[in-house]
Amino acid sequence: MKRSIIITGGAGFIGSHVVRLFVNKYPEYKIINLDKLTYAGNLANLRDIEDRPNYRFVKMDICDFEGVLKLMQEEHVDGIIHLAAESHVDRSIKDPFTFAQTNVMGTLSLLQAAKAYWEPMGWQMQHCAVPCRFYHISTDEVYGALEMTHPEGIEPPFTTKASSGKHHLAYGEKFFTEDLKYQPHSPYSAAKASSDHFVRAFHDTFGMPTIVTNCSNNYGPYQFPEKLIPLFINNIRHRKPLPVYGKGENVRDWLYVEDHARAIDVIFHQGKIAETYNIGGFNEWKNIDIIKVLINTVDRLLGRPEGADMDLITYVTDRAGHDLRYAIDSSKLQRELGWEPSLQFEEGIEKTVRWYLDNQAWMDNVTSGDYQKYYEDMYKNR
Ligand code: NAD
Ligand code: TYD
Figure 1 (cartoon, protein in one colour):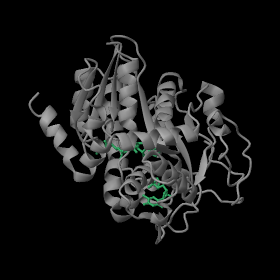
Figure 2 (cartoon, helix red, strand yellow):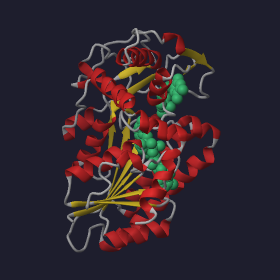
Figure 3 (cartoon, rainbow, N blue to C red):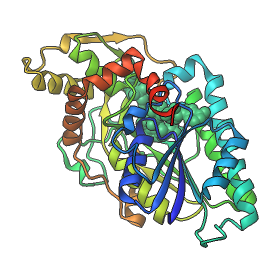
């Protein structure tokens, strides 16, 4: 095997797309999916690649320093792509401790294990001279919230393939750029921000070859249905209320998950050490507008009169500390590494809604909790 890479959190939403991409695209690499299988980890997300010879699943907590170090030695790991995290803002408001434990202490433990293995080799695999790399996946939420200076939307200064659709508007002049000061507001983003600082500190203090990327909201198949898009698609299908926080005016910048996975591939292989890259689709949407698109799309695909389910919209108490607007400027990544989103938002949403409607068994498995038995059945006796 040419390279041996640990992908943490590979059983989660984004991680499963990254694992699939790497396993398929690089048969000469060994891809090790290290995941604790929390409520958010689902091995059924990877059923199509689980028997590949270049794939291995290891059930492990990133906080297990000894376990990670042993695994790195055993597999001669030269790269870590770190996605494992607690990722839902609402949960972080209820239980910040778990977020600090996993996102901060877990990342630190992983960094310490990588340092213990790589530093004595001069940050390079001795047997093949492959340089080591610790790639940390983070979020745009570390930058805090942007103002909404143009509630009706303005033409943004950036254009991309994905942004040429008719809904593409910006809701302010400012965007998150890589040099912006961190101003996290939620316990989730505070914990992610702290982990980003630890990763950079390991570069600055010990010379560890690190990269950090901060991405906007992802959408697509296999997302846990506590997040807006899969939750609402499932609720519309079952004609259940759609709990819209506040007035539904908050703006998020949405990127199709496979485009994020492609960006991670490009950055892992070509990104400059110690750099930060922002990843986003220049694709801002007010929550309420996206919810209306979801209702129209689900209704149409299910053969219901389009918009018949608008009355499911239910305004509820706003999320505490709800960030108003996120908008990523990913022009550095486009300019320096040539990455750009491949999908128009309209295409991506259609594809996503179809996927959830066509994969009701996956959704039922998750909502019933049955998915957590998958590991027991598939892996315990191997
Ligand atoms: P997710 O919640 O779907 O998956 C997280 C995965 O991490 C799960 O498989 C879970 O079992 C695993 N995990 C949790 N704690 C662990 C631990 N202690 N040890 C090992 N594994 C553990 O998350 P996601 O939405 O796929 O996000 C992945 C990463 O991308 C996170 O770091 C998140 O901060 C970042 N991110 C997410 C988004 C988004 O829109 N979802 C946007 C930008 C960045
Ligand atoms: P979410 O998918 O939780 O992602 P994040 O908080 O990381 O951006 O939420 C996306 C947006 O949708 C956010 O502004 C909160 C809002 N939201 C609702 O209005 N209702 C809901 O039930 C959920 C889960 C989210």
